[in-house]
Amino acid sequence: MSNAADGVGECVPPEPTGDLSAAVLGAQRGDEAAFRAVYRALTPELLRYAAVIVGQDAEDVVAETWLQIARDLLRFEGDGAAFRRFALAVTRNRARDLLRRRRRRVQEITVPTEELPEPRTSGVPGAGSALDTAEVAGAKLSTREIVSLIATLPGPQAEAVLLRVVLDMDTRSTAEILGKRPGAVAMALSRGLKKLARLVERPEATAVRR
Image 1 (cartoon, rainbow, N blue to C red):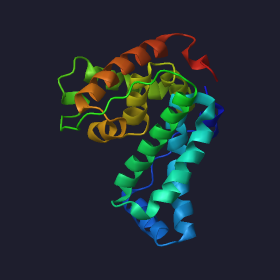
Image 2 (cartoon, one colour):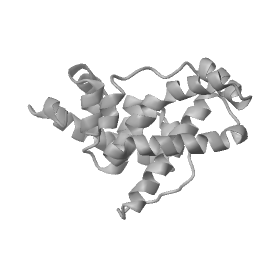
Image 3 (cartoon, one colour):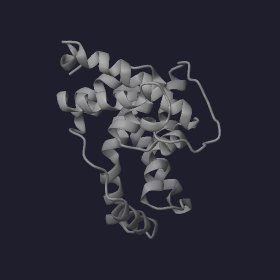
Image 4 (tube, helix red, strand yellow):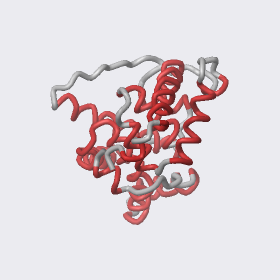
């Protein structure tokens, strides 16, 4: 697993939406302390997300992400939750740019976002039990170990699991970030969590890429 993911430590709850909203507004007004607050609040999870996509180059991706955010900050409109989605989307785009530079095959899917229920009630077979399994996995493994295991999943599944389970995004926000239908996100989440559950049950799971 990427050293970048290791460096951010255990999972820290995101900045409360109201506090982040105020910090974003302050940063837009030129308050350097407010910008530092936004940076500190979001960088750990941006690193986790980037590490799942590009591994050891996560820090470079996040550096590029903040350069773009700084350029686009004055044009941003929305609250703290919207800014968090924006930052994650920028991170994903910069990570995918890096993958293209590596000449790896990247699948681009851009479709409208539609309202669907959350995975526990979405009708996707096994979605509820898969999330239960993720909760059990969280009790067995550290965040670093879970992110390391998630990175071994196929790309779409890894991103869905990371955003929904580790970063606690809802399905619609995840779909917006990934540019996919919520139904496709729910399906990728279900498949990814089932594979993750099998990995967790393997005796060597806690030793994966420490």
